[in-house]
Image: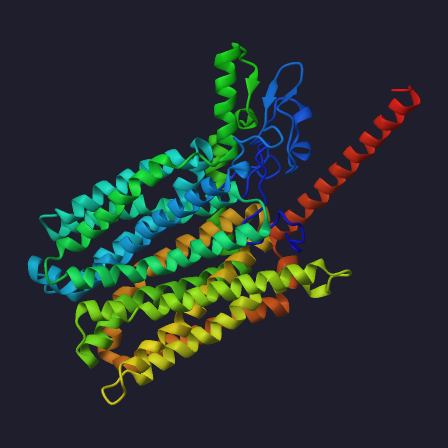
Length: 562
Protein backbone atom coordinates (compact mmCIF):
# COMPACT_ATOMS: atom_id res chain seq x y z
CA UNK A 1 0.00 0.00 0.00
CA UNK A 2 2.95 2.23 -0.55
CA UNK A 3 1.31 4.15 -3.33
CA UNK A 4 -2.45 3.80 -3.25
CA UNK A 5 -3.05 4.97 -6.75
CA UNK A 6 -5.91 2.57 -7.49
CA UNK A 7 -9.35 4.02 -7.05
CA UNK A 8 -10.41 1.15 -4.85
CA UNK A 9 -7.60 1.61 -2.44
CA UNK A 10 -7.42 3.88 0.59
CA UNK A 11 -4.60 4.12 3.07
CA UNK A 12 -7.09 4.73 5.84
CA UNK A 13 -8.80 1.37 5.29
CA UNK A 14 -7.04 -1.56 3.62
CA UNK A 15 -8.27 -3.30 0.48
CA UNK A 16 -11.21 -5.66 0.63
CA UNK A 17 -12.79 -8.21 -1.66
CA UNK A 18 -16.19 -9.71 -0.92
CA UNK A 19 -16.19 -12.31 -3.63
CA UNK A 20 -13.63 -14.45 -1.83
CA UNK A 21 -12.09 -15.17 1.53
CA UNK A 22 -9.64 -12.28 1.65
CA UNK A 23 -10.42 -9.49 4.11
CA UNK A 24 -8.92 -6.18 5.25
CA UNK A 25 -6.70 -6.27 8.30
CA UNK A 26 -9.26 -4.51 10.47
CA UNK A 27 -8.74 -7.14 13.16
CA UNK A 28 -6.45 -10.10 13.78
CA UNK A 29 -7.38 -11.75 10.50
CA UNK A 30 -5.82 -15.04 9.45
CA UNK A 31 -3.98 -15.25 6.12
CA UNK A 32 -2.75 -18.37 4.41
CA UNK A 33 0.64 -16.80 3.82
CA UNK A 34 0.68 -15.22 7.28
CA UNK A 35 0.61 -18.01 9.80
CA UNK A 36 2.00 -21.17 8.33
CA UNK A 37 -0.74 -23.73 7.73
CA UNK A 38 -3.32 -21.74 9.57
CA UNK A 39 -5.63 -21.43 6.58
CA UNK A 40 -6.10 -24.35 4.23
CA UNK A 41 -8.21 -24.35 1.11
CA UNK A 42 -9.59 -27.63 -0.11
CA UNK A 43 -8.41 -27.40 -3.71
CA UNK A 44 -5.63 -25.45 -5.42
CA UNK A 45 -8.22 -24.01 -7.82
CA UNK A 46 -9.34 -21.69 -5.00
CA UNK A 47 -5.92 -20.37 -4.12
CA UNK A 48 -5.46 -16.95 -2.52
CA UNK A 49 -3.69 -15.69 -5.61
CA UNK A 50 -6.72 -16.41 -7.73
CA UNK A 51 -9.24 -15.21 -5.17
CA UNK A 52 -7.83 -11.85 -4.23
CA UNK A 53 -9.23 -9.93 -7.14
CA UNK A 54 -11.77 -7.32 -6.16
CA UNK A 55 -13.59 -7.75 -9.43
CA UNK A 56 -16.93 -9.56 -9.37
CA UNK A 57 -16.83 -13.33 -9.60
CA UNK A 58 -19.28 -15.78 -11.12
CA UNK A 59 -22.01 -17.02 -8.83
CA UNK A 60 -20.39 -20.42 -8.25
CA UNK A 61 -16.91 -21.86 -8.82
CA UNK A 62 -17.01 -25.62 -9.22
CA UNK A 63 -14.39 -28.33 -8.78
CA UNK A 64 -14.83 -32.12 -8.41
CA UNK A 65 -15.53 -31.80 -4.67
CA UNK A 66 -16.82 -28.32 -3.89
CA UNK A 67 -19.19 -25.70 -5.24
CA UNK A 68 -17.79 -22.43 -3.89
CA UNK A 69 -20.35 -19.65 -3.67
CA UNK A 70 -19.47 -16.05 -4.46
CA UNK A 71 -21.27 -12.86 -5.46
CA UNK A 72 -22.66 -12.31 -8.95
CA UNK A 73 -21.76 -9.18 -10.88
CA UNK A 74 -24.06 -6.52 -9.43
CA UNK A 75 -25.39 -8.92 -6.79
CA UNK A 76 -27.55 -6.85 -4.37
CA UNK A 77 -26.43 -9.14 -1.53
CA UNK A 78 -22.87 -7.86 -1.99
CA UNK A 79 -22.44 -5.05 0.57
CA UNK A 80 -20.50 -3.07 -2.04
CA UNK A 81 -23.70 -3.02 -4.11
CA UNK A 82 -26.03 -1.82 -1.36
CA UNK A 83 -28.13 1.16 -2.42
CA UNK A 84 -26.94 4.61 -1.36
CA UNK A 85 -29.82 5.08 1.13
CA UNK A 86 -28.97 1.71 2.68
CA UNK A 87 -25.29 2.63 2.96
CA UNK A 88 -26.21 6.01 4.45
CA UNK A 89 -28.37 4.25 7.04
CA UNK A 90 -25.43 2.01 7.97
CA UNK A 91 -23.07 4.99 8.23
CA UNK A 92 -25.48 6.89 10.49
CA UNK A 93 -26.16 3.83 12.65
CA UNK A 94 -22.46 3.19 13.12
CA UNK A 95 -21.82 6.84 13.94
CA UNK A 96 -24.55 6.73 16.59
CA UNK A 97 -23.04 3.55 18.06
CA UNK A 98 -19.64 5.22 18.29
CA UNK A 99 -21.24 8.27 19.92
CA UNK A 100 -22.87 6.01 22.52
CA UNK A 101 -19.51 4.50 23.33
CA UNK A 102 -17.55 7.74 23.49
CA UNK A 103 -20.21 9.77 25.33
CA UNK A 104 -20.19 7.02 27.93
CA UNK A 105 -16.43 7.38 28.36
CA UNK A 106 -16.70 10.94 29.70
CA UNK A 107 -20.24 11.12 31.06
CA UNK A 108 -18.93 10.84 34.64
CA UNK A 109 -16.69 13.90 34.38
CA UNK A 110 -19.46 16.43 35.07
CA UNK A 111 -20.86 14.73 38.18
CA UNK A 112 -17.76 14.31 40.35
CA UNK A 113 -19.00 16.60 43.14
CA UNK A 114 -22.51 15.12 43.56
CA UNK A 115 -21.05 11.60 43.33
CA UNK A 116 -18.52 12.49 46.02
CA UNK A 117 -21.23 13.91 48.28
CA UNK A 118 -23.65 11.01 47.78
CA UNK A 119 -21.15 8.26 48.56
CA UNK A 120 -19.15 10.25 51.11
CA UNK A 121 -15.84 9.89 49.25
CA UNK A 122 -12.92 11.69 50.86
CA UNK A 123 -10.17 10.53 48.48
CA UNK A 124 -10.19 12.62 45.29
CA UNK A 125 -8.29 9.91 43.39
CA UNK A 126 -11.31 7.60 43.66
CA UNK A 127 -13.36 10.09 41.66
CA UNK A 128 -11.16 9.39 38.61
CA UNK A 129 -12.19 5.72 38.63
CA UNK A 130 -15.61 6.06 36.91
CA UNK A 131 -13.85 7.45 33.82
CA UNK A 132 -10.60 5.48 33.89
CA UNK A 133 -12.15 2.10 34.64
CA UNK A 134 -14.43 2.51 31.61
CA UNK A 135 -11.39 2.86 29.33
CA UNK A 136 -10.05 -0.52 30.48
CA UNK A 137 -12.89 -1.97 28.44
CA UNK A 138 -11.42 -0.34 25.34
CA UNK A 139 -8.46 -2.70 25.65
CA UNK A 140 -10.80 -5.67 25.16
CA UNK A 141 -12.35 -4.64 21.85
CA UNK A 142 -9.32 -4.90 19.54
CA UNK A 143 -8.21 -8.15 21.18
CA UNK A 144 -11.53 -10.04 21.31
CA UNK A 145 -14.52 -8.48 19.60
CA UNK A 146 -12.88 -7.43 16.33
CA UNK A 147 -11.73 -11.02 15.57
CA UNK A 148 -15.15 -12.35 16.65
CA UNK A 149 -16.82 -9.99 14.16
CA UNK A 150 -14.83 -11.68 11.39
CA UNK A 151 -15.94 -15.13 12.54
CA UNK A 152 -19.62 -14.49 13.30
CA UNK A 153 -20.35 -11.23 11.47
CA UNK A 154 -20.43 -7.58 12.43
CA UNK A 155 -24.09 -7.36 13.44
CA UNK A 156 -24.28 -10.26 15.95
CA UNK A 157 -21.18 -9.01 17.78
CA UNK A 158 -22.42 -5.41 17.79
CA UNK A 159 -25.82 -6.49 19.12
CA UNK A 160 -24.41 -8.80 21.80
CA UNK A 161 -21.99 -6.21 23.15
CA UNK A 162 -24.52 -3.38 22.93
CA UNK A 163 -26.79 -5.49 25.15
CA UNK A 164 -23.91 -5.57 27.65
CA UNK A 165 -23.40 -1.81 27.35
CA UNK A 166 -27.11 -1.04 27.80
CA UNK A 167 -27.60 -3.43 30.71
CA UNK A 168 -24.63 -2.21 32.71
CA UNK A 169 -25.36 1.44 31.97
CA UNK A 170 -28.71 0.75 33.64
CA UNK A 171 -26.81 -0.95 36.46
CA UNK A 172 -24.62 2.13 36.85
CA UNK A 173 -27.65 4.40 37.18
CA UNK A 174 -29.04 2.15 39.92
CA UNK A 175 -25.74 1.41 41.71
CA UNK A 176 -26.27 1.42 45.51
CA UNK A 177 -22.56 1.68 46.37
CA UNK A 178 -19.51 3.34 44.85
CA UNK A 179 -17.82 -0.06 44.42
CA UNK A 180 -20.87 -1.28 42.53
CA UNK A 181 -20.81 1.82 40.35
CA UNK A 182 -17.16 1.23 39.43
CA UNK A 183 -17.80 -2.43 38.55
CA UNK A 184 -20.79 -1.49 36.41
CA UNK A 185 -18.69 1.13 34.62
CA UNK A 186 -16.02 -1.45 33.84
CA UNK A 187 -18.55 -3.87 32.33
CA UNK A 188 -20.28 -1.07 30.41
CA UNK A 189 -16.89 -0.05 29.00
CA UNK A 190 -16.24 -3.60 27.82
CA UNK A 191 -19.56 -3.57 25.98
CA UNK A 192 -18.80 -0.13 24.56
CA UNK A 193 -15.43 -1.15 23.13
CA UNK A 194 -16.87 -2.96 20.10
CA UNK A 195 -17.95 0.06 18.00
CA UNK A 196 -14.50 1.62 18.38
CA UNK A 197 -12.76 -1.51 17.06
CA UNK A 198 -15.33 -2.82 14.54
CA UNK A 199 -16.96 0.20 12.85
CA UNK A 200 -13.90 0.91 10.68
CA UNK A 201 -14.29 -2.61 9.29
CA UNK A 202 -18.01 -2.03 8.66
CA UNK A 203 -17.21 1.01 6.54
CA UNK A 204 -14.62 -1.01 4.63
CA UNK A 205 -17.31 -3.65 4.02
CA UNK A 206 -19.61 -1.29 2.12
CA UNK A 207 -17.26 1.17 0.38
CA UNK A 208 -14.53 0.16 -2.06
CA UNK A 209 -13.46 3.53 -3.44
CA UNK A 210 -10.85 5.77 -1.88
CA UNK A 211 -13.02 8.90 -2.00
CA UNK A 212 -15.97 7.28 -0.23
CA UNK A 213 -13.82 5.60 2.37
CA UNK A 214 -11.92 8.79 3.05
CA UNK A 215 -15.19 10.59 3.75
CA UNK A 216 -16.68 7.96 6.08
CA UNK A 217 -13.44 7.41 7.99
CA UNK A 218 -13.32 11.16 8.58
CA UNK A 219 -16.87 11.01 9.95
CA UNK A 220 -15.88 8.05 12.12
CA UNK A 221 -12.86 9.81 13.61
CA UNK A 222 -14.82 13.01 14.18
CA UNK A 223 -17.45 10.98 16.05
CA UNK A 224 -14.76 9.49 18.29
CA UNK A 225 -13.69 13.05 19.14
CA UNK A 226 -17.12 14.65 19.56
CA UNK A 227 -18.55 11.90 21.76
CA UNK A 228 -16.27 12.52 24.76
CA UNK A 229 -16.98 16.26 24.45
CA UNK A 230 -20.75 15.82 24.70
CA UNK A 231 -20.45 13.73 27.87
CA UNK A 232 -19.34 16.49 30.27
CA UNK A 233 -21.86 18.96 28.79
CA UNK A 234 -24.79 16.59 29.34
CA UNK A 235 -23.69 15.45 32.79
CA UNK A 236 -22.79 18.98 33.87
CA UNK A 237 -26.31 20.28 33.27
CA UNK A 238 -28.13 17.32 34.89
CA UNK A 239 -25.77 17.21 37.89
CA UNK A 240 -27.93 19.60 39.98
CA UNK A 241 -30.85 17.16 39.65
CA UNK A 242 -28.95 13.98 40.53
CA UNK A 243 -25.69 12.29 39.60
CA UNK A 244 -27.76 9.29 38.50
CA UNK A 245 -29.38 11.34 35.75
CA UNK A 246 -26.08 11.45 33.85
CA UNK A 247 -26.33 7.70 33.39
CA UNK A 248 -30.06 7.87 32.70
CA UNK A 249 -29.27 10.24 29.83
CA UNK A 250 -26.71 7.75 28.50
CA UNK A 251 -29.31 4.98 28.80
CA UNK A 252 -31.93 7.04 26.94
CA UNK A 253 -29.48 7.60 24.07
CA UNK A 254 -28.74 3.85 24.01
CA UNK A 255 -32.46 3.05 23.91
CA UNK A 256 -32.97 5.39 20.96
CA UNK A 257 -30.11 3.62 19.16
CA UNK A 258 -31.59 0.11 19.38
CA UNK A 259 -34.07 0.41 16.45
CA UNK A 260 -31.24 1.52 14.17
CA UNK A 261 -29.03 -1.37 15.24
CA UNK A 262 -31.78 -3.98 14.86
CA UNK A 263 -32.58 -2.80 11.33
CA UNK A 264 -28.94 -2.54 10.21
CA UNK A 265 -28.03 -5.35 7.76
CA UNK A 266 -24.99 -7.59 8.04
CA UNK A 267 -22.09 -6.05 6.10
CA UNK A 268 -19.24 -8.55 6.37
CA UNK A 269 -19.01 -10.15 2.92
CA UNK A 270 -17.68 -13.61 3.89
CA UNK A 271 -20.48 -14.04 6.44
CA UNK A 272 -23.09 -12.93 3.90
CA UNK A 273 -21.70 -15.57 1.53
CA UNK A 274 -21.76 -18.13 4.33
CA UNK A 275 -25.46 -17.48 4.86
CA UNK A 276 -26.03 -17.68 1.11
CA UNK A 277 -24.26 -21.04 0.99
CA UNK A 278 -26.33 -22.33 3.94
CA UNK A 279 -29.53 -21.27 2.16
CA UNK A 280 -28.46 -23.04 -1.05
CA UNK A 281 -27.55 -26.21 0.87
CA UNK A 282 -30.98 -26.29 2.49
CA UNK A 283 -32.74 -25.50 -0.78
CA UNK A 284 -30.76 -27.86 -3.02
CA UNK A 285 -29.82 -30.53 -0.49
CA UNK A 286 -26.20 -30.38 -1.66
CA UNK A 287 -23.73 -30.48 1.24
CA UNK A 288 -20.85 -29.60 -1.10
CA UNK A 289 -22.07 -26.03 -1.62
CA UNK A 290 -19.83 -23.89 0.59
CA UNK A 291 -18.64 -20.33 1.08
CA UNK A 292 -14.91 -19.54 0.93
CA UNK A 293 -14.80 -18.75 4.65
CA UNK A 294 -16.03 -22.28 5.40
CA UNK A 295 -12.91 -23.71 3.75
CA UNK A 296 -10.61 -22.06 6.27
CA UNK A 297 -9.20 -24.31 8.96
CA UNK A 298 -7.91 -22.51 12.02
CA UNK A 299 -5.43 -24.01 14.44
CA UNK A 300 -6.24 -22.71 17.93
CA UNK A 301 -2.67 -22.99 19.18
CA UNK A 302 -1.32 -21.05 16.21
CA UNK A 303 -4.09 -18.48 16.64
CA UNK A 304 -3.21 -17.83 20.27
CA UNK A 305 0.58 -18.12 20.05
CA UNK A 306 1.17 -16.35 16.74
CA UNK A 307 -1.74 -14.08 15.89
CA UNK A 308 -3.00 -12.82 19.24
CA UNK A 309 0.50 -12.19 20.56
CA UNK A 310 1.58 -10.30 17.45
CA UNK A 311 0.47 -6.86 18.73
CA UNK A 312 2.65 -7.34 21.81
CA UNK A 313 5.63 -8.46 19.73
CA UNK A 314 5.21 -5.55 17.37
CA UNK A 315 4.98 -3.09 20.26
CA UNK A 316 8.16 -4.46 21.83
CA UNK A 317 10.34 -5.03 18.77
CA UNK A 318 9.06 -2.77 15.96
CA UNK A 319 10.49 0.75 16.24
CA UNK A 320 7.72 2.29 14.14
CA UNK A 321 4.99 0.67 16.22
CA UNK A 322 6.67 1.42 19.56
CA UNK A 323 7.24 5.12 18.92
CA UNK A 324 3.86 5.63 17.25
CA UNK A 325 2.11 3.94 20.17
CA UNK A 326 3.96 6.14 22.66
CA UNK A 327 3.09 9.32 20.77
CA UNK A 328 -0.59 8.46 20.37
CA UNK A 329 -0.80 7.26 23.98
CA UNK A 330 0.56 10.56 25.32
CA UNK A 331 -1.80 12.60 23.13
CA UNK A 332 -4.78 10.42 24.07
CA UNK A 333 -3.93 10.54 27.79
CA UNK A 334 -3.67 14.35 27.72
CA UNK A 335 -7.12 14.45 26.12
CA UNK A 336 -8.54 12.50 29.08
CA UNK A 337 -6.44 14.44 31.60
CA UNK A 338 -8.37 17.51 30.45
CA UNK A 339 -11.58 16.02 31.86
CA UNK A 340 -9.93 16.38 35.27
CA UNK A 341 -8.03 19.60 34.49
CA UNK A 342 -10.78 21.74 32.94
CA UNK A 343 -12.89 21.81 36.12
CA UNK A 344 -9.77 22.86 38.07
CA UNK A 345 -8.98 25.59 35.54
CA UNK A 346 -12.41 27.03 34.78
CA UNK A 347 -14.19 26.44 38.09
CA UNK A 348 -11.18 27.41 40.17
CA UNK A 349 -10.13 30.44 38.12
CA UNK A 350 -13.38 31.73 36.63
CA UNK A 351 -16.06 30.23 38.90
CA UNK A 352 -17.83 28.31 36.13
CA UNK A 353 -20.61 25.82 36.90
CA UNK A 354 -20.28 22.16 35.86
CA UNK A 355 -22.46 22.78 32.79
CA UNK A 356 -20.41 25.81 31.75
CA UNK A 357 -17.19 23.82 32.14
CA UNK A 358 -18.66 21.24 29.76
CA UNK A 359 -19.24 23.93 27.14
CA UNK A 360 -15.55 24.87 27.17
CA UNK A 361 -14.82 21.54 25.47
CA UNK A 362 -16.76 22.52 22.33
CA UNK A 363 -13.81 24.24 20.56
CA UNK A 364 -12.02 20.87 20.62
CA UNK A 365 -14.85 19.49 18.50
CA UNK A 366 -14.72 22.46 16.14
CA UNK A 367 -10.98 21.90 15.74
CA UNK A 368 -11.56 18.24 14.94
CA UNK A 369 -14.05 19.20 12.21
CA UNK A 370 -11.46 21.52 10.66
CA UNK A 371 -8.96 18.65 10.84
CA UNK A 372 -11.42 16.45 8.95
CA UNK A 373 -11.64 19.06 6.20
CA UNK A 374 -7.85 19.28 6.00
CA UNK A 375 -7.67 15.48 5.75
CA UNK A 376 -10.09 15.43 2.82
CA UNK A 377 -8.25 18.27 1.04
CA UNK A 378 -4.93 16.47 1.50
CA UNK A 379 -6.48 13.23 0.23
CA UNK A 380 -7.75 15.04 -2.87
CA UNK A 381 -4.35 16.68 -3.45
CA UNK A 382 -2.63 13.32 -3.05
CA UNK A 383 -4.98 11.67 -5.55
CA UNK A 384 -4.37 14.40 -8.15
CA UNK A 385 -0.62 14.14 -7.65
CA UNK A 386 -0.65 10.36 -8.03
CA UNK A 387 -2.76 10.65 -11.19
CA UNK A 388 -0.11 12.71 -12.95
CA UNK A 389 2.05 11.08 -15.63
CA UNK A 390 4.62 10.53 -14.40
CA UNK A 391 3.59 10.78 -10.75
CA UNK A 392 5.98 12.78 -8.53
CA UNK A 393 8.47 10.57 -6.72
CA UNK A 394 7.26 11.64 -3.27
CA UNK A 395 3.80 10.15 -3.90
CA UNK A 396 5.40 6.69 -3.99
CA UNK A 397 7.07 7.03 -0.59
CA UNK A 398 5.21 5.64 2.44
CA UNK A 399 6.24 8.44 4.77
CA UNK A 400 4.99 11.26 2.52
CA UNK A 401 1.48 9.89 2.05
CA UNK A 402 0.00 10.62 5.49
CA UNK A 403 2.72 11.78 7.90
CA UNK A 404 2.60 15.43 6.76
CA UNK A 405 -0.75 15.58 8.56
CA UNK A 406 0.93 14.58 11.83
CA UNK A 407 3.78 17.02 11.15
CA UNK A 408 1.19 19.81 11.05
CA UNK A 409 -0.83 18.51 13.97
CA UNK A 410 2.07 18.07 16.39
CA UNK A 411 3.10 21.74 16.68
CA UNK A 412 -0.55 22.84 16.89
CA UNK A 413 -1.09 20.44 19.78
CA UNK A 414 1.99 21.76 21.60
CA UNK A 415 1.00 25.40 21.10
CA UNK A 416 -2.47 24.74 22.51
CA UNK A 417 -1.06 23.42 25.79
CA UNK A 418 1.18 26.43 26.42
CA UNK A 419 -1.65 28.73 25.31
CA UNK A 420 -4.02 27.21 27.88
CA UNK A 421 -1.49 27.15 30.70
CA UNK A 422 -0.29 30.73 30.45
CA UNK A 423 -3.58 32.49 29.67
CA UNK A 424 -5.81 30.83 32.29
CA UNK A 425 -5.72 33.55 34.95
CA UNK A 426 -8.20 35.99 36.44
CA UNK A 427 -6.66 38.99 34.65
CA UNK A 428 -7.34 37.43 31.22
CA UNK A 429 -10.87 36.90 29.86
CA UNK A 430 -12.05 33.28 29.95
CA UNK A 431 -12.55 33.17 26.17
CA UNK A 432 -8.78 33.32 25.61
CA UNK A 433 -7.88 30.02 27.35
CA UNK A 434 -11.11 28.49 26.03
CA UNK A 435 -10.04 29.13 22.43
CA UNK A 436 -6.81 27.18 23.04
CA UNK A 437 -8.98 24.10 22.59
CA UNK A 438 -9.35 24.92 18.88
CA UNK A 439 -5.72 24.09 17.90
CA UNK A 440 -5.85 21.29 20.48
CA UNK A 441 -8.71 19.53 18.65
CA UNK A 442 -7.15 20.30 15.27
CA UNK A 443 -3.76 18.92 16.27
CA UNK A 444 -5.24 15.95 18.14
CA UNK A 445 -7.12 14.58 15.14
CA UNK A 446 -4.39 15.37 12.59
CA UNK A 447 -1.87 13.45 14.70
CA UNK A 448 -4.16 10.44 14.93
CA UNK A 449 -5.10 10.42 11.24
CA UNK A 450 -1.50 10.80 10.13
CA UNK A 451 0.08 8.27 12.48
CA UNK A 452 -2.61 5.57 12.29
CA UNK A 453 -2.72 5.70 8.50
CA UNK A 454 1.06 5.45 8.42
CA UNK A 455 0.83 2.22 10.44
CA UNK A 456 -1.68 0.85 7.92
CA UNK A 457 0.52 1.89 4.98
CA UNK A 458 3.71 0.48 6.48
CA UNK A 459 2.38 -2.89 7.66
CA UNK A 460 -0.58 -3.68 5.35
CA UNK A 461 -1.65 -7.26 6.24
CA UNK A 462 -0.11 -6.80 9.69
CA UNK A 463 -1.87 -3.46 10.14
CA UNK A 464 -4.57 -4.94 12.38
CA UNK A 465 -1.95 -6.05 14.86
CA UNK A 466 -0.18 -2.69 14.72
CA UNK A 467 -3.50 -0.88 15.19
CA UNK A 468 -4.38 -3.25 18.03
CA UNK A 469 -1.12 -2.41 19.77
CA UNK A 470 -1.82 1.31 19.35
CA UNK A 471 -5.38 0.98 20.64
CA UNK A 472 -4.43 -1.05 23.71
CA UNK A 473 -1.48 1.15 24.66
CA UNK A 474 -3.37 4.43 24.39
CA UNK A 475 -6.31 3.03 26.35
CA UNK A 476 -3.96 1.96 29.13
CA UNK A 477 -2.38 5.42 29.18
CA UNK A 478 -5.87 6.92 29.25
CA UNK A 479 -6.65 4.78 32.30
CA UNK A 480 -3.50 5.57 34.30
CA UNK A 481 -2.35 9.13 33.58
CA UNK A 482 -5.57 10.97 34.54
CA UNK A 483 -4.93 9.89 38.13
CA UNK A 484 -1.96 12.28 38.09
CA UNK A 485 -4.01 15.25 36.89
CA UNK A 486 -5.26 16.72 40.17
CA UNK A 487 -1.99 16.26 42.11
CA UNK A 488 -0.03 17.73 39.19
CA UNK A 489 -2.27 20.78 38.77
CA UNK A 490 -2.52 21.35 42.52
CA UNK A 491 1.25 21.08 43.09
CA UNK A 492 2.59 22.79 39.95
CA UNK A 493 -0.24 25.19 39.25
CA UNK A 494 -2.13 25.51 35.97
CA UNK A 495 0.68 27.23 34.04
CA UNK A 496 3.46 24.77 34.80
CA UNK A 497 1.26 21.67 34.73
CA UNK A 498 0.17 22.55 31.19
CA UNK A 499 3.78 23.43 30.34
CA UNK A 500 4.96 20.02 31.52
CA UNK A 501 2.44 18.38 29.19
CA UNK A 502 3.52 20.80 26.46
CA UNK A 503 7.21 19.90 26.76
CA UNK A 504 6.35 16.19 26.70
CA UNK A 505 4.24 16.72 23.57
CA UNK A 506 7.02 18.77 21.99
CA UNK A 507 9.41 15.86 22.46
CA UNK A 508 6.91 13.45 20.92
CA UNK A 509 6.10 15.76 18.00
CA UNK A 510 9.53 15.03 16.52
CA UNK A 511 8.50 11.43 15.79
CA UNK A 512 6.75 11.97 12.41
CA UNK A 513 9.65 14.16 11.23
CA UNK A 514 12.09 11.38 12.18
CA UNK A 515 9.96 8.89 10.23
CA UNK A 516 10.02 11.11 7.14
CA UNK A 517 13.81 11.40 7.36
CA UNK A 518 14.73 7.83 8.32
CA UNK A 519 11.53 5.83 7.77
CA UNK A 520 12.83 3.89 4.77
CA UNK A 521 15.86 2.71 6.76
CA UNK A 522 13.72 1.80 9.76
CA UNK A 523 11.40 -0.27 7.56
CA UNK A 524 14.39 -1.93 5.90
CA UNK A 525 15.48 -3.17 9.33
CA UNK A 526 11.97 -4.23 10.36
CA UNK A 527 11.29 -7.95 10.52
CA UNK A 528 7.60 -7.53 9.68
CA UNK A 529 8.24 -5.09 6.84
CA UNK A 530 10.82 -7.46 5.34
CA UNK A 531 8.37 -10.35 5.56
CA UNK A 532 5.70 -8.18 3.97
CA UNK A 533 8.01 -7.33 1.07
CA UNK A 534 8.79 -11.02 0.57
CA UNK A 535 5.07 -11.82 0.50
CA UNK A 536 4.36 -9.13 -2.06
CA UNK A 537 7.23 -10.35 -4.22
CA UNK A 538 5.90 -13.90 -3.97
CA UNK A 539 2.37 -12.80 -4.90
CA UNK A 540 3.75 -10.97 -7.92
CA UNK A 541 5.54 -14.14 -9.00
CA UNK A 542 2.35 -16.17 -8.53
CA UNK A 543 0.30 -13.64 -10.51
CA UNK A 544 2.94 -13.55 -13.23
CA UNK A 545 2.92 -17.34 -13.38
CA UNK A 546 -0.88 -17.45 -13.55
CA UNK A 547 -0.87 -14.89 -16.35
CA UNK A 548 1.67 -16.94 -18.31
CA UNK A 549 -0.44 -20.09 -17.85
CA UNK A 550 -3.56 -18.27 -19.07
CA UNK A 551 -1.67 -16.96 -22.11
CA UNK A 552 -0.43 -20.46 -22.98
CA UNK A 553 -3.96 -21.85 -22.59
CA UNK A 554 -5.37 -19.22 -24.96
CA UNK A 555 -2.64 -19.95 -27.49
CA UNK A 556 -3.39 -23.68 -27.32
CA UNK A 557 -7.13 -23.06 -27.80
CA UNK A 558 -6.39 -20.84 -30.79
CA UNK A 559 -4.21 -23.51 -32.34
CA UNK A 560 -6.96 -26.10 -31.79
CA UNK A 561 -9.48 -23.81 -33.49
CA UNK A 562 -11.53 -23.25 -30.33
